[in-house]
Image 1 (cartoon, rainbow, N blue to C red):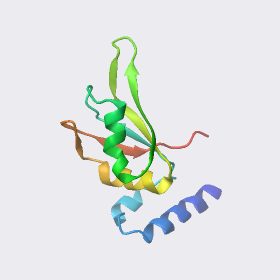
Image 2: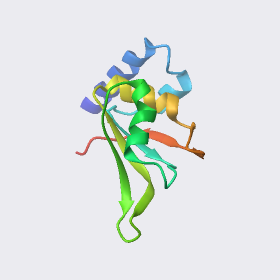
Image 3: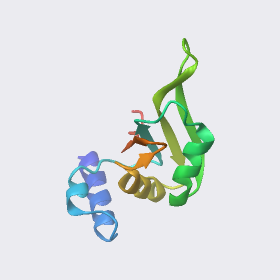
Image 4: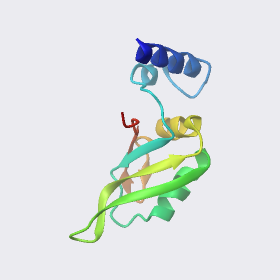
Length: 113
């Protein structure tokens, strides 16, 4: 029941914002200030990732996951923002965009329970 109330609160808060389309609201989940980014070029650095997402707000941390055996990127990572609203805007605007020659996919990082 509590999760349904949280879902309703998030939906209602986003109905007032012009950047979210109705189709995007259907798939909206509980927001956090961290987004998951996949499809990164292997040459993308954490600094470049942070710079690409900084146009949507204050980036606290950009983390690219490395393959330790090959010492290179696995092609995905996480970007942490200062506010949930910034993460939501980045997720909506950056999903499907091209970064360093590759189409990236951005999704919210669900909180650990």
